[in-house]
Length: 117
Length: 111
Image 1: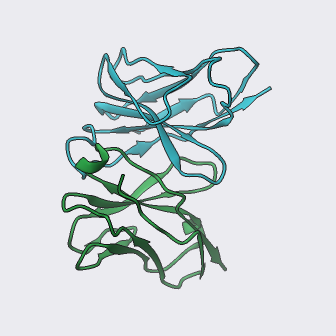
Image 2 (image 1 turned 60 degrees about the vertical axis):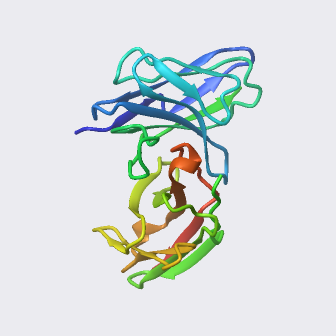
């Protein structure tokens, strides 16, 4: 079955530690996205990538980094510079970047919950 | 950024229709209206989208006002599995193509 997988489901971070969240898709989608969701809130865009080896900052990129070396993979690193990393992190993909039209549907993974020890 | 306004919460009885409203008075002519829903501790899933005309799919119907300043998501027969947070989102050139999620409407369904 095609879809988006995120791992791990839960992740614990110690003070000063960098952690990496995995996102893989086998939908052959060009565009991929990372969102952060705080309790009771909507999603906020961290980074997005329209094509391999290219990515852009979203609204809350500070303290995060990404790479897009393969079409299928878009890992997110939460660095020690992110002072409040506790949140639910969601990865998504779409066939084409939603910049090109208003009709693209985004497909979301199951999410990773990051907690600080 | 174009803004949508939704009620924080709504209640419905099982097997009854549900009408979830959304106001988007600053919508531009090229913005599409999308609806996503998010079940507890899961990622959002796409429900439906439209531009001007009403739309139907297997999950729901979308009724768009003639002036496009509001829309309504219609679940024809609510089930317990429809309990979720429903997000109304505008997508288009003015948003840079980004999905901008508000707080959504939390729908609870009573048996």
